[in-house]
Image (cartoon, rainbow, N blue to C red; front, side, top):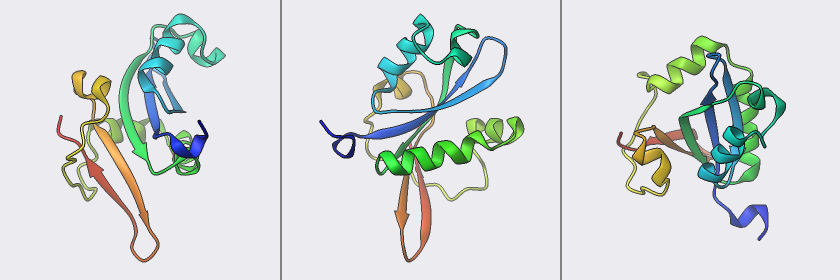
Length: 127
């Protein structure tokens, strides 16, 4: 299956030392298992266990990578602001509950949609 046919998400992990890790995956549950088993990148391998604290769905792989780059550039405080629910962003309740892991753990799941004429809007799932 090509990257274009999968649903891609960015995710934020809180490591055991309190640091944050931002990544991209098509299967968040599988990727979290990899991180916690030591099969992820060296950054998380040395900071286990890690906890999933944020998930955001994207239109496609390219959009997910762009969003990942953006979040990796953010200061710690801004990442925490995002995790807590970013009170000033325009939100809409999501109707699709496609990420069971995030829903079960009560983690906010966002979907980012790009509209050329209007820029970007954010949709948030209930938590």
